[in-house]
Figure 1: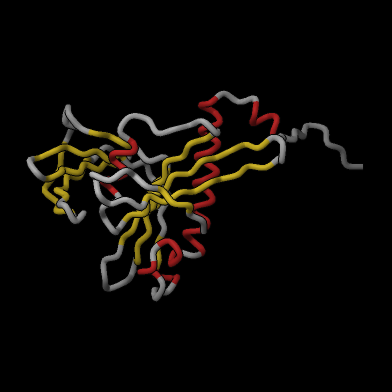
Figure 2: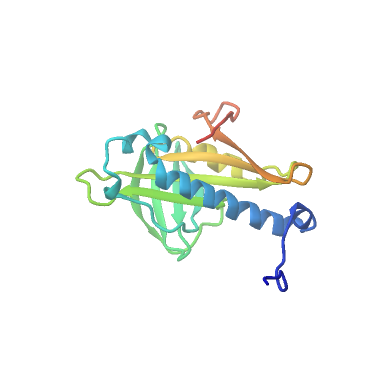
Length: 204
């Protein structure tokens, strides 16, 4: 006769008892799993460019940790990007969001605006003739009162100027009353640095 000896069931009360850092960790993982599943099954709903590409030619690698940072350089912006290995690619970005690769840096400059997305998902057409690459960058806030910190909003706004990236904000709520976890997604819409950052509801 089966029994439940050694089995633990975790309900919403358990998540409610976690500290803010642990809740944030759970929130990031939940959003990451959801976005990766959706991007794998329906990439064209994220980026229409994949609508006519055979699914066998689409490659979605394991998520990596990316760091984005910007420096002012006259009237231009220098974008710095690094993965977990800290190899830094340096690009010039113009007013239209186009990037020009200008070299490699060994260290971060002293003056920069940094942001490390909680989730970075990169998708490419692995065997296509055209070089197509798109990224989903998501900042996750867990709990009803979590807000942006530091330069997160500024860097997201600059990154949003390129058409090869989808900038998302996800708010994760552990609803103990309804015994469910809800995720509210918003998409960054503004592309003018002088304008107020605008977000619209996003779902897939």
